[in-house]
Length: 171
Image (cartoon, rainbow, N blue to C red):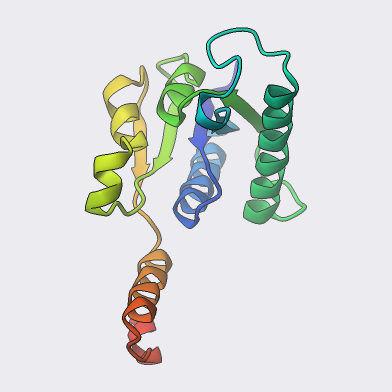
């Protein structure tokens, strides 16, 4: 069996950056690229602890599949990324879903680090830190794109009602 590169995604700019890096790694290694989107029922939802035949869970699962297709189309267009591609939606938290998906020490797990504000760090655990601590295989943590930092700076300026200097975006 060929090796696998497993990449987590949520559709954010940071996760798309990591997804492109994962595709490069898969091409270099002549490996399959598995793209994982974790999902959970809203607020734990009915059936959060068991079974799963409820219409809400079915709707959530179908929504996750649609979202993953949309993310892959955004990342790679209508053409394949040049590697064998598999999309997988997994019910669970993102870190656990990714760690459960990698099963061989020869796999490579690719995650985005994203930018994390102090408030976000306090409210949500870091997926990349979870994966680094628990994965049975090497983990590649991809920093967010410089474009993402530029966009965040634009949003901060907009919030303060400061004029945008276009020269700040070309670095």
